[in-house]
Amino acid sequence: MNNFVQRVILFFIGIPALLASILLFPNQPLPLWNLLVVIFSGLAGAEAALLFRSDLKKQEVILSGLTIALLTASAFFELIFPAFEFVIPTLIVLLVFLLIPVALAGLKDLPSLIAGIVSRIALLAYPGMFLTFLVKISSLQYPRLKILLFLTLIFSNDTFAYLAGRSFGKRSRHPFAVSPNKTVAGFIGGFIGSAAAGSLFLFLVPDSLPFSLPAALPFFFLIACTANLGDLVESACKRAAGVKDSGRFMLGRGGVLDSTDSVLFSAPFFYYIVLLFCR
Image 1: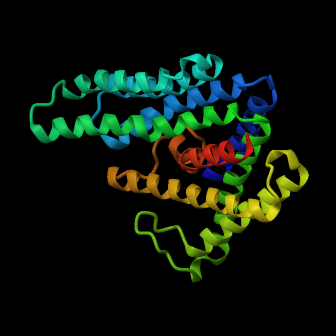
Image 2 (image 1 turned 90 degrees about the vertical axis):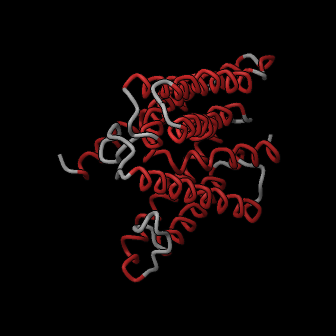
């Protein structure tokens, strides 16, 4: 089965499933959406653990995935029980102290000890804490509209960047060594795509943001910038690990991190800007 066919299959299965998780059971805080986030966060955590340290044993990879899934699940728990706002900070501290002994086990030299500890702490930040913002977005006013707008901005950036890169990339600069296939034409196309799709969404669904269109455009550009940054960071991690894809779970798209890198870095910016101006 070639890559294109795999992508088509993923599209016709993944998009309806994603929309169903947002539109079905619309009561806050969107249980199906958050369940999907928890499941994929576990897979992303396992992939990231292997990117940081390729020599991990199977049980360590599983533990890493469960750790990140637990982190996002605790964010969902906070939404259901707002009185427990201390859950995530406490959980992070506990997880650090639980993971450090795992890092120490079987490591005999100081550089390996330090690398093991740092990689596990880094895992809690990326993708751990970034993923919790996908849960937090569901706590905003009109959460379904916010999530749909967020995904529209991200996917339109990725799609138009790909199309512009394919159409004009041969005559465009390749400014980033960590991702040689990325071109200036692709970045410009992504910015235009996000701005156009976001503007159309805001026109069709005015309640999605309390911004006028001129005020919303800088917001759309910022999300496109952070989406590109997430893509570059994940490319740097894969290059450092010497792998092409973060995993093989997503048909035609590599791993979960390959499909969500743009989402991860954009989610905190989207959440805090909307929280500040729109709640």
